[in-house]
Length: 570
Image (cartoon, rainbow, N blue to C red):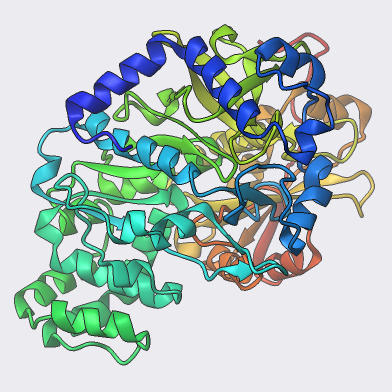
C-alpha cells in the first residue's frame, strides 16, 4: 500500500486532498459497515446505516473514561466484537506524561497499512525541498521500550515500539532515502543507555555520510547531544581501539558492533579536538558537516528546545514532518522546511474519520468545513473501534491544501496551573518562560516545569528552572525573570496578583545541572517510554516534587506585582 515513487506519492496526496470530504464519507461508511455488529455500535441502534447524518445524530462523543470498562474487558481476554469486528492485535499506550495516565488504545493489524502509507509519503514531500537525501544516511536516535502484557496476553506498548519491532520496519525494503546509521540491533536493544551509546558510535563512524540528524521529539535530540557531551571520551577511546566495550551486554548488539567497529585513530583525534573546545556552539555541524536539517518535532511543548538546538546546530532548519498519536496517524507537513512557528499539518482524509469541536462552544464540524483562524479539539473515529473519540489536542486552522485543512498544533487540552480563579495553560506558561529567559544574557533555560503551591496563603506559582551550565546569574536577574513571567501571564492571573491579592508572588527555583535527566530516569523507571517521554510542564506528584526540591540551589520571588488594568490587553 506504500507509495513507491515520488511522483506516485505526490499524486496520491493531491488526489486525497482534492476530494477530502468524499474520502471522509467513504472512510466513515467503511468503518461503520466493518464494525456494525460490534457491541458498542449496536448499542446505538444504527440499523445498518453508514451515512454521516445517522452517525452524527445517534453516536455521542467519547472520552477514554467512557470506554475504559470496555477496554478492560478486552485486556482481560473478552474476544467478542466489543469495539472492533476485527481482532484487537495489541494495545498502543499513550504518552504517560501527556495526560497523566497511560491509556490503552486498541489496534488492529490493518492499521499498519495506513500508518505505513503515511510514512511512505514523508520523503517524497521532503525531496521537493532538499535534494540529494538519497546520497547519504540519517542519524536518527530511535528507541524501543520493553512491552507489557495485559491479563489476556495482548501486548501493550507505545506505537513506535510496535513499529520498530514490526516486520514492516525490521525487514523494510532497501530505500536510498531511508538509510540509517543505526543498525536494527541498536534500535531494538531494550537497554536505552546501550542503545544510545551504540547509535552515537555508529553515527560518529559514519559522520561524513550523515545528511539529516534527528529524534522523535526535540527533547530526545537534546538528550543525545548531552549524552555525547558526557561520554565523548569513552566514545573516542572505543573508536581509537576499535574494540567493543564491555558495557555492551546485549548479545545481538555486541555481535553487530563487532562487525562494524574498526580502529580509527584519526577519527578519535578529531572527536577529541572538537569536544575539548571551550564551546559546544555548532557542535552538530562540526561533527557532522554535511547535515542539511534536523528531523525533529519542535511544535507544542517541544518549542522550548528550539533555542538549545539552534545553539548546538548553528541554526540548522528543523523539520517537523508528521502529526501522529497512539490513537491515530493524522497527517503530514507539506512544507517541512518552514520555520517552526509556521508548522502546519495537512490532515490526510484516508487515515480515519475526523471531526472538530470548536473551542469556546459550538457544534461538531466535519474536516472539510473547519474555518481558518479558529481553534478546535480534534475527534477521531477509527477502524480499530474508537468512535468520535476526543484525542485532547487543540489545533488552529491555518489554511487549506486543496479541500483538506491544515492545522497548527496549539497545545494539549487541560494542562493548567491554577491557585484561584486563574487558569494558565501550557502555551501561556511557555510564552512566559520564553519572555523571561530573554533577560538571561550569559546562560539559557535548558528545561522547566511548574507547580501550583497552595500550602502558602495566598497560593502562588512555583517555576523550576535548570540553566545551561547550572550557574547562577548576577544578583537581581532572577527576580526580574520572575516579574517578566508574571507580566506575560493572562489578565485573570495579573488581576489576582495586582488587584485581588488572591495570588502570591511567582517563585523561580533554580535546580542543579542534570536534574531533568534524573526526572526522566525516574519516569522511565515507572514505565514511561523514552520515545514518548515529554517533561511534564506541571507536576503534582509528591515523589517528583521531592526530587525537584532536593535539587534546588536557590529560590527567587517576583519583587512587585505585575501591571494590570481592567481594560483588555490586545
